[in-house]
Image (cartoon, rainbow, N blue to C red; front, side, top):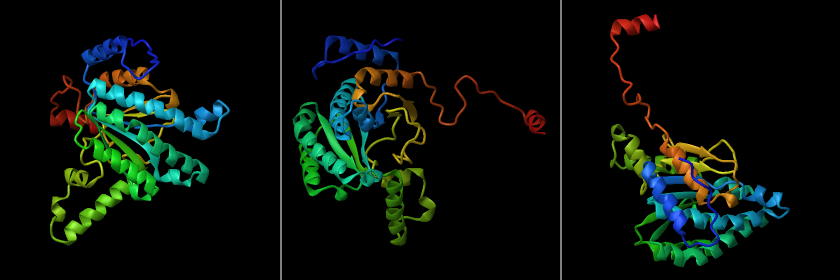
Length: 277
């Protein structure tokens, strides 16, 4: 199936876009959870002769478009890697600009999230953010807490290693207190202590800007996620390419380490011995 590129001039969904979405739904399953590493804002701006913050500002439009299109498609969870713990090492001026942009964006989008029945949650070391950011986040989270169409998760001051470390600490305390036996520790238990416990593991992870790495994002949760890498910078990533990513996902054979259906065949012990001898 070839999906024709679509450029939207406003945030209202067009009839053409509705038809594209219905066509996509008919070709296969829509991912329950999509996670995105939004990369390339700074390089996008610099190529245009602007400072990096212009790229971050332009990226807000992509966040809006992708969030709304995911909700329209029936995606239940969307997680966006907005700010990593490593990003604190950037120049102070850029960080300050990012934090101001975050506050402004939350104010601007709160009503739209409420209208579209989208719930906002966060993961990461939120306490490291400026108090103004924390207050604005809490306001929007409170406003949208009863929404159920889709959960939008912003990973802010987040690190996959931090997430796992915190889970290990909490489990260790539970073991020390006698609430958990070491023998009971398994994948499901660890997952229940991660910051993403309210969502299933991502089915599809998208990274923009063409970099082939996961940058300390959801290290535990991405064990069996399908990857989609695009050279497109985040400010230019819109719903037309999201549809291409989902279509690519639909063509994958997700085996989770098993043999593909229809290709299982019993092999006798004597044959195995001949092969490995």
